[in-house]
Length: 235
Image 1 (spheres, one colour):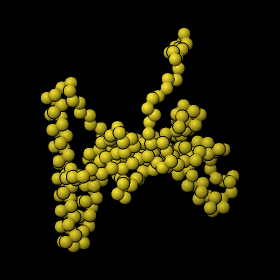
Image 2 (cartoon, one colour):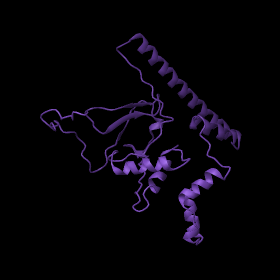
Image 3 (cartoon, rainbow, N blue to C red):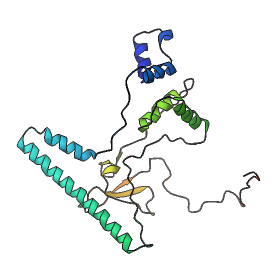
Image 4 (cartoon, rainbow, N blue to C red):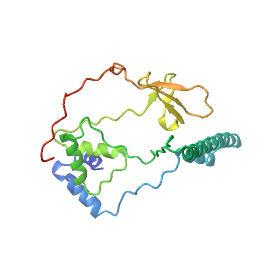
C-alpha cells in the first residue's frame, strides 16, 4: 500500500519533502485510521462456490439444468474420493506395519519466499524487514513479494514470479489441484503421469524438465570427502 501511495504522490507531482516516510505512513495507518485487514475465514471449496453462484445467476431453465447436471457430477466425484480415502484407511488398519496412509491437506499451506541460499545476507534482509514492519501479516506469497521489494531500497531485489501453469503433452493446461491420481516412474525422470477423473481410462503425462536442462541423473555420485567432517570441540 505504501508503494501505491508513493506512486500516487509522484504521479500528482507532490514534492518529495511532503511524501511521508514508510515508518510514518505505517504508524498513521495502524494507529489513527479505524481500518484493519480481515483474517481469511476457513476455506470453502472454490468449485462448489462457483457452481452455486452460477446456478443462482442462471438466465434460463436450460442453462440452469445444464449447470445442475454438471454440479451433480462434481458432487458424485467428490463423494467417490471420500469413499476411496475411507477404504484406504480401513486397509491400513487391517494391515498394520505393512501399509501407511498419509493424508496431506495443502489448502492452507503458505507459499514462502525461496532463495537459492537461504542463509545468505538476502534472506536476513527480508526476514529483518518482516520483523520491523509493524502490523504486516503474511497471508499469501504476494505478501512476501512486497516485503522483498521494499527491504533494500538502495539495491532493490528483482522479484520474479514462479511459473504456475504448465501444458501437458497434449496441449492441455496442467492444474495440480484437479489431479486425482498422480504417479512417477524411476526410468522416466522428470515425467509425471496423472488422471483428473476416476473415470478416465488412459493416463496423461507431462514433462516438467525445462528445455536445455540435463534430463538424467549420473549413474554414480562421487564422494565429497574420504573421511568424516571434523566437528569443533565446542559443538
